[in-house]
Length: 381
Image 1 (cartoon, rainbow, N blue to C red):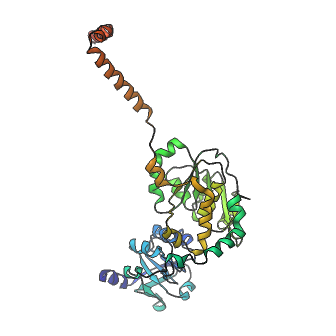
Image 2: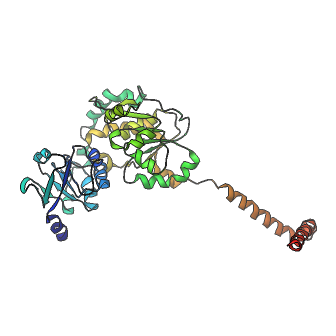
Image 3: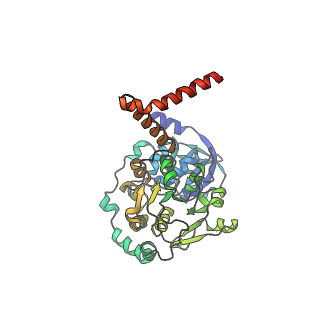
């Protein structure tokens, strides 16, 4: 612990990149930059996006772990060896993009002047007492009623949900941009080769799919979180429009001249993708990089519990994680394997027949012919 504290106390400098949305910020970060965010109870998905960009430090205007939820983001940041400074106050958000600052312990200096003071987060800070599940889900009933009033028709009945072309009764694979997605996608390689699923990428999962040479039948989510190549590679693009009328990424698609459809619902892009897939004719919906545990659900925040719950309810028994598919899948034997097995079986039958008088007489013409051919070939050579 003392080594960590002394390391964090050493002055370090870097340019700041600022955004209230960590996932969007991650698309602009470079290795030596300092990420400035404004997020209470930093969730795992946002933290993983920041870690993948590799900033030298994460500076948060708010506490990354308030104790209200089991926020998993701070641990992800520290596990990656990245300095996390918390509760710096809103003054840190007044910095301009690209300004050079110096970090000394929990202090942020601009041109030698302290502009914000927070606390460098250590592993001891992760051991805070959080509210129990009953408290965390308090008010969930009201959230359900409010959510169904706004999105009930979309989620449960599929009203105004865009249709996915060319799905048929094939399974659908939803690929996210989470840290586990690449490994889970590799585990599904043999299954994908045999099942030929319909591929939907969600947000930055589009670039994960491209890196794995997986064709994109559809992309659902925020175009600002993926590369231009991924956007151009999608056969179908669907944007989620929130209850506030905002459609993240739509402006970029408009500038690129990309035609897209939209689905209006609260929640995340993953929730929207599950709903769209649920109202298709797909035989199964396999999620890549999606966790379903209580901790993950609470980590996303109370406002997202209802959308996450009902999107999964709409999918029903067709929804399954990639790890479950990989664990139960038994690949069909390859063609050359069957040929080899057939030859071995024929050879064993021949040996068995040769060992009997009747079989010896039956196979005598064959062995004589083979002997003659071998002698002829040897004489020719």
